[in-house]
Length: 211
Image (cartoon, rainbow, N blue to C red; front, side, top):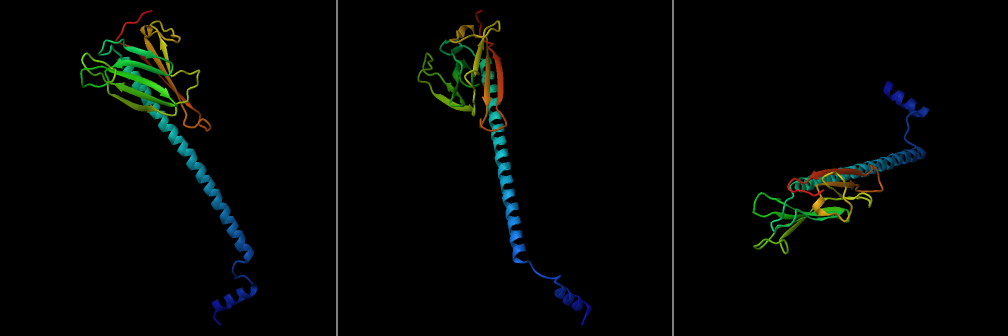
């Protein structure tokens, strides 16, 4: 008998060369299942956490652009094409003013920023007829920020006169010299990371204010 065959035969006799027993097979299956479940839980948690972070990041970026957009146009507020005062309405969650939104066309548009159900909208109305009128004019509404969770103690819009004194509601629009916009962004108030507050300010350039 060859040496290799002798060695294999000896191992068989000594019990060194054998397959898995039933108990060992069950243990392997149980350990494998436990590892699979653990990996599944970790992957699900990782996905949910990163998905929330991504959603929050998108909402914050959108809100920042929305504030920049509002402040840019507020700085350029001017008298309406129908002769209306530059600021038509000033409230804690909305503001309506007149500004040249596009480089084409002879008219100044009516612009409204309004917070409704956690979304900040911008509505632009173009005047019609001659003399110009904003009543019945064509309008376009755009969502510029979502997941806004401002508390009642954090108004979206605050107004200040030429001395820097905050104007209390109801605001006298003829005294407005600057506007501060603040939005609190949080796509899920029940989860971390916590909400982020964004602010922007605009000084109205094209009008004389009263003290």
